[in-house]
Image 1 (cartoon, rainbow, N blue to C red):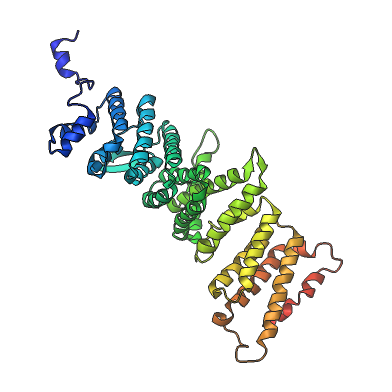
Image 2: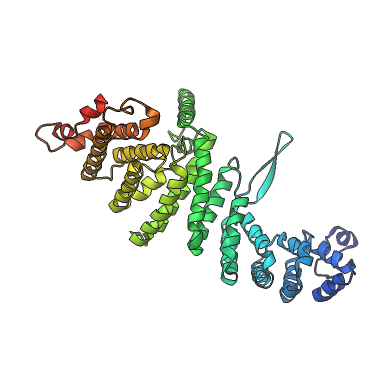
Length: 450
């Protein structure tokens, strides 16, 4: 037995329950008797609520979901705020069952339930005090991954019982997306969990990819390459100066090179790794390339590329998603180049888009080592022939003068051709007894004269 002082100091046990059954409480509330209803809300809001009592309450709520109409929206919102993920497994299972029953019987709570689940896609927040200032950061404990798995179980269960789940889920994912200035870990977890959804709700994959790439693009353009390179140079110079008198027992500190000096670049780097990992996992099954999965993913990504990446000025990194995907199969690379080529020569496409398509074509053919020289030559032939036809069609009329605004796609195509030749000329002329025979056949001198 506890002594008198021990009893006074010990917290009260939460096994005692006040009020009648849940059904009685709800019916009395509808009649205007709110005393027991208020007591119920107070108990549910108690942070010291024991697992056994939560299980008992959830069991009664499951049996009374038909009574939880919009009139009890406030009570349901309290239930959705209950901290259930870090409790015992019986509580988790009972809560998942409650969510399933609730959204099945009362679809008006579908969006709030989805919002609650998605809010757990990031590590919980903790407050750290530094110099009398409260700093909020992510608490990345060992149970975070387990909590993510449970959230995905909940989403899969809800999607199974409510066919409209995808339509309600996508707006929630948009609303809950963290600001780009949040911590790297927060952004990483949210993007990773969003991409996981596309695995069991494939109808959302295109929309999810579009949302992720849109947000990553914003980070990309906010960190120009020159700023990133300057920050890295400053960091390397600082490390070199420290190394003059710094004696490290291990000889080197590999962790110094793992983190980007530019904070925005570090976020971008982490999110790009998540996207690359996703692309690789989707395209490979049991370590082997799955052609069907690769083609399906290509179709989704190329539409996102056309809508977001192609018209975005100042993007330096996100486009490598397409380059990475194309490296898996030559057919995908050729399809991507053909797609850009059709866009370049289509006069009905806006000039700025045609110019961007030409730039990407040149960069892709010049830098992608996995594209064989035969394909490079074929594409270069098509490009140069189109340039000659374009010049011939101008004649000597009023449009036959240098005007970038009028002939922007033409000059972009010229630049693409020269760019490819500069970087691939050794491979292009390799095998010819007379170096430059192929280059001569392209008649690029006429382009230079123009």
